[in-house]
Length: 134
Image (cartoon, rainbow, N blue to C red):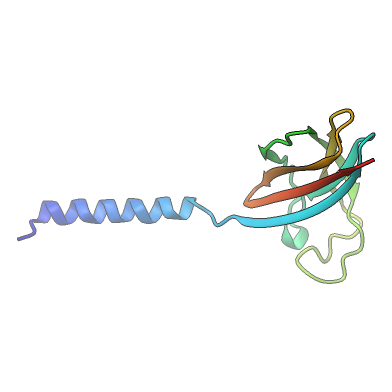
């Protein structure tokens, strides 16, 4: 037989699980492939800091989840004007200044082959497969 106290505990635990489940967002995964030269630093991605509807211009800085094994990854934050967007959630942002994080990769000296880097921005996890050529 369930007592009132047991029912309250079950209710509290259920409510806590429901609240905590709302804190865990669903991550979006993206995979990109880039070919870079072995002797130079190359931009391999761009992360925009514009929210849908252009209500807020935000500063979003990527977190590196997996560092490259044969090179270095770096991020440079710059302010840039949003280009013309004809459709989608960024429509109407044209001409406004937004934060953009450029993702750069520099292979180790003399390295030629395959490498990868994975970074997260908000709920988006991006894996970049990198092919380093001479």
